[in-house]
Image (cartoon, rainbow, N blue to C red; front, side, top):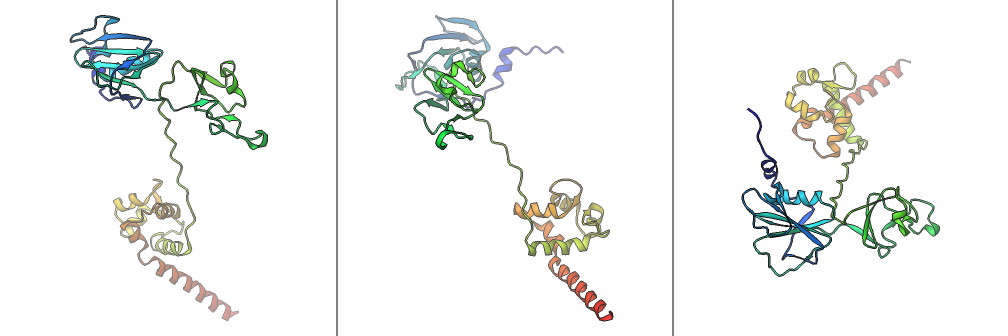
Amino acid sequence: MENTESAYDAVSKDMKLPESVEEMKGHCNKYSNHKRWCGKTGCSASDKSKGKDPAGDTIAGCVKKCDSEEDCVAIAFKANDHCVTYYGTCEDSADSVKWGFTYYRYKAAPYYSYPACLPGCLVNNGGCPGGTPCHQVSGRMYKVGSTCYLAQGGCWGCLANPAKHTTAFKALATCKYIAPTPEPTPDPTFVPLVAAEKAKFDGGLAKYDKDGDLKVTWEEAEAGGLTKEEFDSMDANGDGVLTAEDYTEAVGSKSTGDAWGKFLEGGAYRSAQVSATSVLVFVLFSLRM
């Protein structure tokens, strides 16, 4: 059967409001222009109407329309009616007057207002006179005059005339809110096992590691009494064997549960036994010399 889903239906499924906008207390004032986008079920728009459009069906669709329109800074939405997009500026009247609409505008952009932001909006990447920060912060937004620029690299002195330095800055149509990029999750930092923990692991290893390769395979673990579920929960890196690296991560993340407890059971004692046996062998060997 042919898929007859319309653009209206596709947009209507996405009801999640993006974090880039916030609800206003009143309506838009002092805007430079506006447009109206009618919904498919009806429309009371009398001026600036652009006809039927998916933007008129949901708040999310209205926001998407604003995203696609240059210099759009706010929206108004009335269910089962239409969407209004506002351009240039939008001051919140804050008087609860909304005429049946819900008003949203873009949050204040996280930009540095230059040069008022000095010196905190610059960094020292090396070579700054007297150590005073002199480089722009790559990836941050700077507002110079009435224009916002996205810094592309750590240029020195480019903020004095950002329009001239097109490789160091990207001029933005508006100072709209830009959602911050999530910080990458750092790789876990492994620290060496302390002597007591290493002794326990070595003791457990001696119990399970039958071929002496310092690894415990699933077959060896099963023969020693571990279940598959326990083995998998201990295999932190998923390489199919248990090693000191897996135990180090478990200790570092404080996730040494019952499975590791079972592995280490009597571990310190067994390690001590191994050490004592080694000493005894050495002593007996020495006496024979």
